[in-house]
Image (cartoon, rainbow, N blue to C red; front, side, top):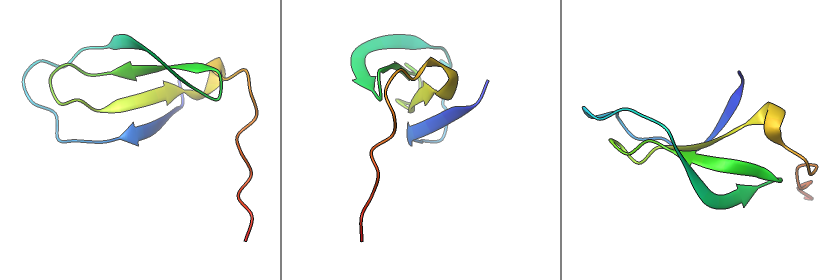
Length: 54
């Protein structure tokens, strides 16, 4: 599955996946309890990404 990482940290010794209560673009945010990396799975999005304007 394709993912977008929101926070990436070097992984420690307790890799895993915890689903949080936070949502980004309608998708649940997942967290690794070992390194606190956070991401969403792109195929779980239900809202379009916010467009950035310049």
